[in-house]
Amino acid sequence: MSERLLRGSGVSPGMAVGPAVVVRWTMPEVPHRIVPRSQVEGEVRRLRAAVRDITRHLAELKERAEDRAGVDEARIFDAQILMLEDEVFLGGVEDLIRENHLTAEKAFEYKALEVRDAWSAVGSPMLSERLADLTGVTIRVVQHLMHVGADDIWGSVPARSVVVARELTPGLTVQLDRDYVVGLISEQGTRTSHAAILAHSIGIPAVFGVPDAVERIAAGTVVVVDGARGTVLLEPTADELAEAQVREASRLEFERQLEAALDQPPLTSDGHRIALRGNVDLPDEIGSAQRHGAEGVGLLRTEFLITGHSRLPSEDEQSAYFQRVGLAFRGHPIVVRTFDLGGDKFPAAFRAPTEPNPFLGWRAIRVCLDQEDMFRTQIRAALRAAARTQIHLMIPLVTRLDEVERTRELVMDEGQRLAREGIEAAPTVPVGVMIETPAAAILADRLAAVSDFLSVGTNDLTQYTLVVDRGNARLADRFTPHDPSVLRLLRMVADAARAAGKPASVCGEMASEPLPAVLLIGLGYDALSVAPPALPLLRWLVRHVSLERARAAAEEALAAHSAAEVLAVAHRALAELIDLRLLADNVPGCPEIEPGVA
Ligand code: PEP
Ligand code: MG
Image 1 (cartoon, rainbow, N blue to C red):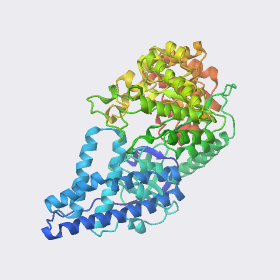
Image 2: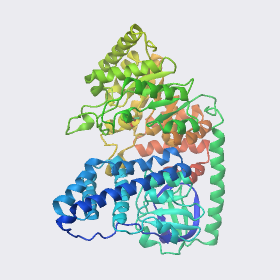
Image 3: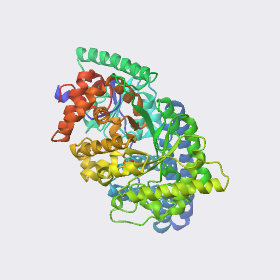
Image 4: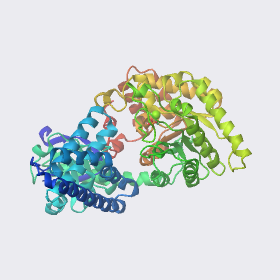
């Protein structure tokens, strides 16, 4: 059995059975050819024409993705289109052609390799996702320049087969027909890969990150793809095939349950309300948050207003955006996070200093307080939008009381000024503190006294407490937001907020994982804000959890010796409330929830 069972990450749930087809979409061998001086400008023109053609083609694929996967998912193609519109990159390719008399395809390949090396050296997950886009764009442009067919590989795939590849790009995935390709297996990629996101939206079960899949799965072998558990079973027996069918039926039933939960209030089984809000990074996610039942926005990230732009956003632009979000969630709060610049967010409009350690550097509220004009503009925009909507302001990466006090002064000041100017605006807005540093957690009682609410950003709080870079894949096993040390801080924050009579919420990724979410509820957090697609499962979970049991689990978890023990505690609690197989079988990335693990 073990040789027949391959393991990877489940990235798109569902069971698929079919014969394997191996597809190869790789970089063609580009010959090293020097062109005569007289042809150099011709190569530059050829480059420009190819870039134009591919940009047009990507725009078509984007439209196709909008129809098939949704507007949010189609945005994935923007990253590739932007690469082809990047004049610094294209200028670099032209320089290689002109200075070294290379062909357009060789120069493009070299430049892409140079960028790949530079991005790989940074080692951030955000950039590693962009690496897959870079590969996709490079293969496309080079194949086009060499007149090698790029997109016709699907023509040769027989009906109802399972595709096996080294790497699947979004461009290839969005063209898949669910009737033709029933499952996907890839050696590369993770749950956050763009191809994985598209496979999920189109509804094709997929397992990525399967080592040596192309070598180990011979063409024509019948395989069973389990897109939740992340397994691939080769040559299944009749019994195994029957089991796969049962599993698929149970998954469809689970999906129906999640959908049904969206029409029911997010009350625990013993009747306590947990507010479930959405984290919105980009305007396109507003619709997704609405569809997934968000009761407002618990974290409205605003960095996109700056990054990728050559100038700072105006007061009118920001105010219009905040108002638009507010009107989309009438009657619910919209928590606007003030610019969280620096660290992993690189603003183009801003000459940010190169720092040896940017995560401990000039970032977030530090930047805003130093750049007072920029900060005042954002505050005024929030106050204006708050005239008609429930806008709150939230300050990231706070470490000191005076950061909150100064922000409040600026809010008061701008509120008064807007009134003097006769501009329609709220006189003030609730100002909250993001608890993302050990300093803020330790000072939570004092911070609660000078603010209107606290919201824990567990991504940064974990990073700074455990001294584990949140983007370092090598340390991924150590990035455990449910570590006993982080839980203690979470407890301190919840207690401080309760004592001060101020609301406390969590808006980091931790809240979207079933086991840790139970502990957060037990610690006393009655508002959770997560990425919109995570909302249906969270709502379903809340409705199955009793506050009383969650509290007992949190108490027990606080006494645990290790992160693994904490998970085991949450696992035991959840096992009393629901059939854990439902999660293990149906939710990609829930292997720790395997029944009997604890
Ligand atoms: C966090 O740090 O947990 C958080 C929600 O903020 P971001 O992920 O944007 O840093
Ligand atoms: Mg943060």
